[in-house]
Amino acid sequence: MEQAEKVDADEDAGYGRERSGEELPGELARRATRWEKIGEAKRVLEERAREQAKRKGQSEAEAKPEAKMQYNFSDPESRIMKGSESFVQAYNVQIGVEPDLQLIVGQLVTQDGNDKQQMQPVIEAIREQSGQKPAEVVSDSGYCSDANLYYLEEKKIEGFVAVDRESYRDREKPCPRGPLPKGATRVDRMRRKLQTKMGGAIYSTRKAVVEPVFGQIKQARGFRQFLLRGLKKVQGEWAIICLTHNILKLHRLCYG
Image (cartoon, rainbow, N blue to C red; front, side, top):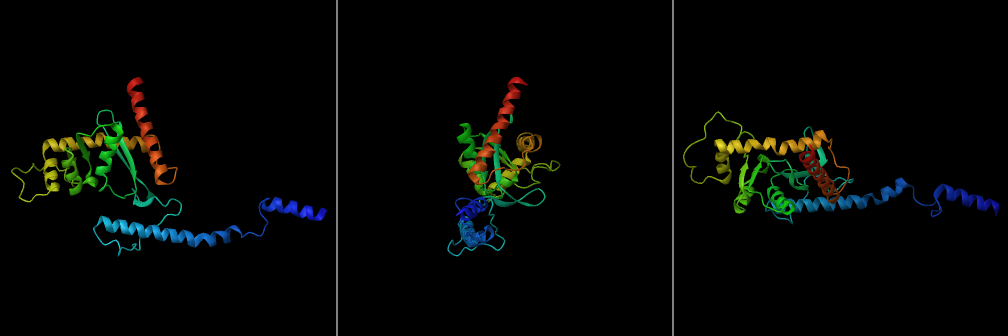
């Protein structure tokens, strides 16, 4: 009996009181559940393929994941995006900044790798979070699309959106005179607007409004990556970062 009690005590110490010692080792248990995780990843990739097909107006039933599609098991809701030096697993953050005090008046986090679909969500975030619709919007070429420019027209928001990287930088060439050719698109009209002195001057204010805020957050405060996982938690983390930025700005305004 003493020997049996000693064996029981040794097993409890080695395996825990709730375990018998006959369970599968951790490595084997992980292999047994690996197919479930792979199956879930496959289902997610197939759903993404259907969403992409829907956006492009293609058949969802025939959509299949591309060979380069990837799935992250640590944070499935993140996406592979192009960084400054390479591709990274990331989220795409958005902010709207007012020009006088550099306060963030709207913020959100998206899973999209570019900003083509973000004009409307950002405007809606500004309206919801600041309580008013912006009268003017200045944004880089990442937001330029016929759909986005149509949205600004529909909402009666004056837009100054770069149509490409060079459309607003060439100041040597004079702005073309006369009416635009028949059939000119919204993008053509926006290009002409930025070629005018007034349009170019207004667009140039962007470098003193939005870019410094990102610089202050990333460089001055050292925020380079999210510490949490999952879109909902990352949204909360980004909201706290933006709130902190505004508090510091207001503190300097009142007590600086």
